[in-house]
Length: 245
Image 1 (spheres, rainbow, N blue to C red):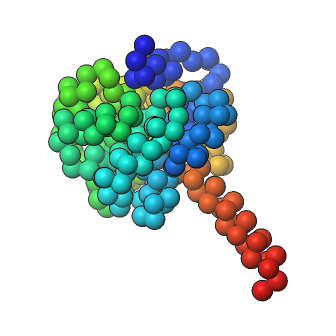
Image 2: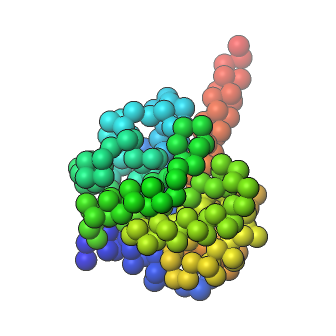
């Protein structure tokens, strides 16, 4: 079984009361920690990697993002899927080749551009279809749907319409980021067996509750890196206080 096939199977072979939870490592050390804890796959967050490299979210140069993903992949034995934002303007074939060189077996690709402007859904679906054609079955495609992030006037209807378009284009999973818990059952009902990715938030539903609401997969965006940075900041403050200065 290829790593991409194994990753795909993880999204379908699930118990009724638990989603696939994929932590988001931002470097090799965090990736090893999540693997050691027993997680079967990992999903890198572009925001977390950006922060670890000293960039604002969305401002990481493509070369540095691919290099960071490659370091994470090399450090673990489980499948890794990479958040590659909007694809960095790369032609589909080149994007797929860069992903293969990094060792990642999945991608997260979003449908908004600079300034949280939504892309035309049909044009984006056509682009995803080209990515699928270039990759074949060897790449797991998670299509991020940004209608909630971009304040679409009718986000649920738009999320359903875009998700169906992206599924027809070859997406393995859809990710309506920031979809409120109340919308997850409608999304689940409309999308049938298509895996549905939900964002975990500190004050949001538990993992079992997200599964009952319809989520197949749960990721964290840059949330885990932010929590780790908070802990480091607390440690730094404590150490500084211990100096007596």
